[in-house]
Length: 453
Figure (cartoon, rainbow, N blue to C red):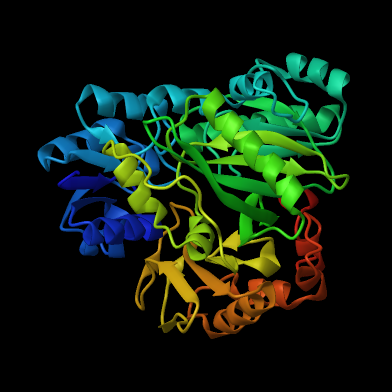
């Protein structure tokens, strides 16, 4: 087992990893930009080191600075969290070359999952249904228009690298497609250092269902159940739950087997997620494999009793999974609290948090780096906290989470807490009638293409 782990991330996920390491007796090293000097992760770690100025390209995305920090602090392993360098094959490869264990999949598996067009081909060859789309990265607008003629509109332009909804645009015609290509490519380049994009048929009225994978280095690959992630804004998830009301036992079994086939097809190890679109007729399609821990992993932890970050660390250290199956219990729902204004199309709201209150109680969990006096920077993702409620059944989880969200206070900074509370109290959510259009009933100004899974 590792003695010292560096966390190449910030905010709530860095705090989450630090706490898991602490419970395992592992010393932690935090890295931070000058904008994050007062951030909670920098003070909770056993050691912390500044790696550059606020822009991510000069700090959290700057591989030489992170590797240097790891070597200076004698870190045996690096946990990348999610976002930033978590799905960067080059970074994972450099870690390996420097004899630093990357807590995640191999560089080869990251490269395969990151090249989403190539990954789709590999997974399709393994017998997993995929959404129709381009077979390779799109070179230019002319090639994109040719693909559009073959599969038809509407189309999604998607970043080949990274995830989290960044580098994604919806196009309904030729003109919109040309604009979407340039916008998605520029956003992907800024977020992931890779401007490659591909095309995918937009499956209307589909639900977004993903399966959590754990795979060790001894040939065992497991799924830990699904998560329903259909409620989104700006291509990013807002509310997630497990189990999904859209799945019966037969469909769950089929999708779970498909997720395992997808993981094996790309030679995956560690924690990852196979993502699917579920059409209204019950047909499902693989869309991508996320080679990292997910923001919404706590809902899976709530129903399984597992600590997925600890499992990541154990797998990376070479330990086998100590079980062959997991039986989830109850229902868990997560609401993401972003520093955004829902009434202004979810515009970010950086600023200083005054009075701050976060909920607690039976069946509740809050993952956050928030505190009174914290300055929400403008340089990074605006996620402030995740509130997770577990219940013996879905109704209990809904009531528990709604009450908890009512308690959230972030004075001086607008957030999505009240919006999430209204959504989960609504009749459609309670019925399980989820879809990309649901959020529009609560935020009329939301752009139509900002709510697609």
